[in-house]
Length: 111
Image (cartoon, rainbow, N blue to C red; front, side):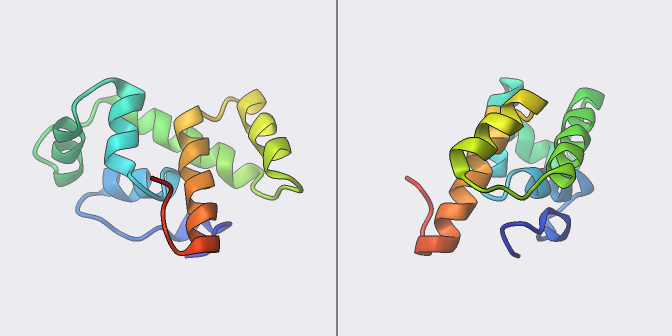
């Protein structure tokens, strides 16, 4: 998956997992748990289908996907970050994509 291609995220167990991976290219469980202030295990249960996913989680993921897909080209990383923040993209979503860029450059994730 290329850095700019948020529409072709790898599949996981349940549809919510596909949406989470499309928004958070790495550490989607941890990042989603931080956004909604729940334990990672709760997110894992959402993804596996063992626990009903709150509507606000679906809405958040769809909104973030839409925002990312509307404007995913940038000239400088700082400019892109500020533009995304101004548009309402959540900091955890931005951080996930910065990590993906780092991984595409170095082959490793930010620790």
